[in-house]
Amino acid sequence: MGGAGSGRLGLRRPDLFAGISLLGAGPMQLDFMDAPKGTDVPPRNRAALFEAVWGSDPAYYLAEHPWTIASQRAAAHVALCTKVRIGVGATDAMLASNLDCSGAVDGVDLGQLLGEWGPGHGVGDINGNGTVDGVDLGMLLGAWGPVA
Image (cartoon, rainbow, N blue to C red; front, side):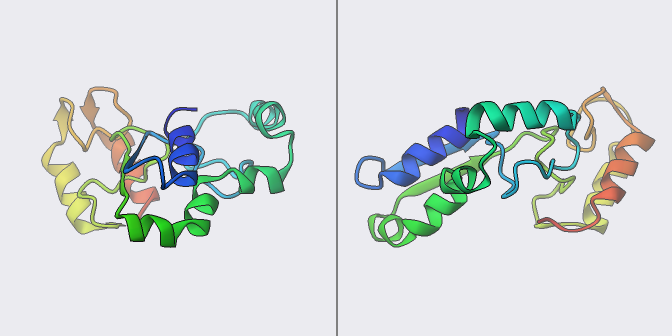
């Protein structure tokens, strides 16, 4: 399970792991069937995955969720100074269009996107098609506000 799996294992065992790295971890939503912004996985496929991995059981899904495990073992991780790194790519469907990583999609992000307008890859190329254009602008404006 990649990043989510490392989160589940590492967060469960603060006595064994001094550091945990969740790279491109998903799913991070607390309701698996609540698809994150930007995903193109059809609901039927999401339901099949939910059945195959978690038996379509929301309680089991939450019990295995890195957020749940982290909240249950937070005191141990703080006491042991566990290092936690979370990395998400600029075009990951899990990431809102927060280009400057400030915690909000705002005018700074808009300025950065407009400054990269045209052909080329950069953080403003949100959809990763090689051009910063109106599609990227629409995605940025659709995510405007605090990053949840």
